[in-house]
Image (cartoon, rainbow over all chains, first blue to last red; front, side, top):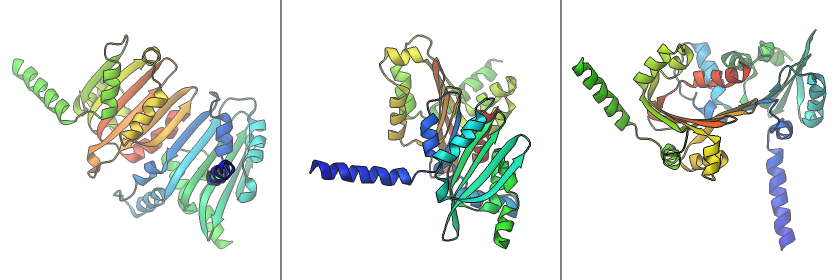
Length: 175
Length: 161
């Protein structure tokens, strides 16, 4: 009987673990490391945007997109010498196989990759991994994601990197 | 002059009474009453905005422009140890008191968590900001309304200096 209970507990735990966002493993590894900065925004925050009045049609679209989000997590380390190794490690810990690469950006001082998880035509998670000379950042946005609005949401929050997704929604439609 | 002071006192007392403190804040106040270096402050939103204007905290003043009342308590970590209680335990009290976590930021060992209790009239919501630093804990309770745009922006900005 004890074994059955243990098995049930294990199955439930495994199920809830797989339901976590992609960067949970990464977060769990570094959650007690004070050199990292963590931001965690819950669905409650995004819910506050439901039924908010907007000044323009464009703002209304952004508010609607925000209200469908379920959470945002950011883990970053600035002014560090191990930014490159963290960037590599991220790809080992994040279950990239479950995602589709959306876009990658490389410039002289940083690499940036965007991944999405899509099912039945809906995007449920967007992951951004950024590694520079001395900065590292991984971000996971989950919920019902409207790619066209993500760069605007990023602008609203001043999240660096998301502006790269400008027009990506239109590009994806064409493909 | 006397009548101005009386009017201000009456306004302050009336506004203090209208917005009753939450169970969570009440618990903190009672638990640490008389402890060394514990400071508590209760201000009407109007007075808070005047103080913030004088202090040059214009962004914070804008953020609380629709806040009706603010309570602040500053508790040294040593007082938590003396009372044999933890911040983690207090977070459970907040949840029991119907506060939901809205956002959290951990930056260089400082932990900032914002909780919220929504009311049917959202202009009367309660917010609880818990700041855990190396040597002290600051709890701020706000009644009224804070624009979610301001909260969303400040969550990332606070971690991005």
